[in-house]
Image (tube, rainbow, N blue to C red; front, side, top):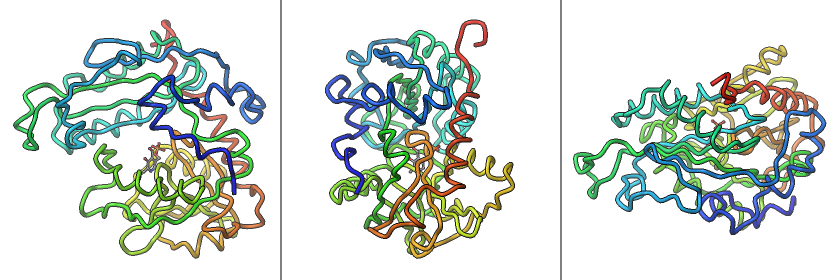
Length: 340
Ligand SMILES: Cc1ncc(COP(=O)(O)O)c(C=O)c1O
C-alpha cells in the first residue's frame, strides 16, 4: 500500500486554512519530478485570498451568507483550477463549463464570462501567487427555502485562491492503490454528469471515506450497470496493447478538462483512443492505468483492489502522457499586468 496520504484531506485544508499541513508547502519545494522539467517556481508563504461578490478578504476572514443556496441545498456549481508559474491553466475551458452549468441550472450571472475571467485574473494578481489552486464557486444566491423563488439576490460568486496538493511526489512515481467502492455515480438520467454541481459530491465524499478506511489512494466508482465510471475526484484511463481507453461520458462521468487534455495529447502522439464502456476486469487486465484531474493532475494507478496492474512499474504511455501534461501546464493564461 502507498502510505503517507491518509492523514491528508484537501477539504480540511480548504475549510480550515492554517490548521493542517498542505503538501504544497511541505513537498513541492523538493519535488524532483517538477524541478526536472522546470515548470514550477516556488514561494514558501503564498497569500490566500477570497473574492466574494466583489469584496476581497483574507482566507481566514472570508465568510459566506448562512442562507447561501449551496450551503443550504447544494444548489450551485464549482470549478477547481490550477495556477502553474503565474499562469492559470485551461481557464477558458473551466469558465465555459461553469457558464454551461449556470445556463442549465437557470442561475443568472451578473458577470459575463469575459468579465469574470478578468476578475479572476486580477484576483490572482492581487494574491501574487506563483503556483496554486483556485476554487471558483457560483451558487443560486441567498434565500431560505428550496424553491428558487426564495432566492432574491444575485448569484453568489466566490473565487478562493489557495494551494492544494493531493499527493506527494513519491506517490506520482509509485502510483496509487485504488479500491472499488460501494458508492455508485449518480445516473446520467438523474443528473447530467457534465454539471459540476456542488450537491452531487455527497456520494463522492462517501466513496472517498470508504477508500480512506481501506488506506487506499483513491476510490473507484461504478455506475448503476456495474461499468467503470470514475474515481471520487478524477477520471480514469487504461492502456492495453497500446490502446488508450477511458469511460464514455454517458457512463456517468464528469467530462474532465484534464481528461480532454490527455485525450488530445494522446491523439497528437498517434496513440489510439477509445471512449467506451468497461468493467473492473478490464482495469486489472490492463497494461497500464492512470487517473486525471485538476487536483490530482496525471497520476499512475498501481493496483485495483489489491491486484497489481501490468508489471507494477510505470508504463511507457503513462510516463509519456504524464510528462507531456506537465509540460503543457506551462501554457496557461498569464496574469501579469501587461498580459491580463
Ligand atoms: C468527480 C470528478 N471526476 C473527474 C474530475 C476531473 O475533472 P477536471 O479534470 O476537470 O478537474 C473531477 C474534478 O474535480 C471530479 O470531481
